[in-house]
Length: 285
Image: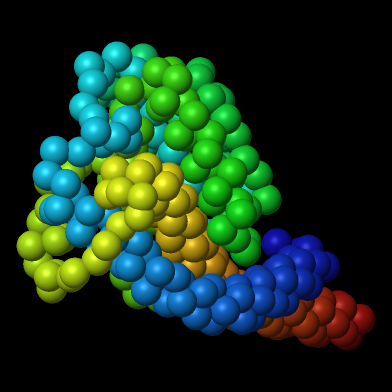
């Protein structure tokens, strides 16, 4: 490779390395805030679940549309992805997890949260019931509420008979895994188990247990979605930070290799010039 081409390549790779290094720092900064937000919502989620568990334990058989089983004719999955790439296999992993669940059901459909998920299922001609964007960076409870209300509406109208949630579970900064849980209909047995594990509470519900349940269940759905969106945001940022760190290291290794090639090519060019000078001098003699 000519010296000029190697020099241009080194400059190009060095510019890319500066970009990946900057993206790594930005993702690292955002990750700290996202982790704090994720830890803050856990107590609220647990408290909401405990209220439902206590009501289910006291009422026994619950008459609530969100807890009643029905014949499954159409399955939908709420898929939470990012709006941008450059985060390793984060988006592809959760989309494939959702796709595996859809292939097991009949008349599959999706509700996508994130541009990458929308594009993934659009290219596979899977019906998209609703699509949301620009929520992955800093998801809010308002964002989750808008998604939750749409999902609840689809379920109550009978447009879907069961709803799953596909998101990414945070394990550590360098490790996460796609997760899928059943969102609707809710299983009363899950809450009974939660109630059995928790302490007995003496609570008076006004105007009644079922009315309180009717009020709290939609908010529980919104909270589950909010928690999944925040946790997925943490995973996206950690994946991007890891991917950009690896890209920076690869760029540094590439620059070292190109520098060696450049030095060898330069040394070869100098040796050739010296040889030509000596040969010309000998010819004159």
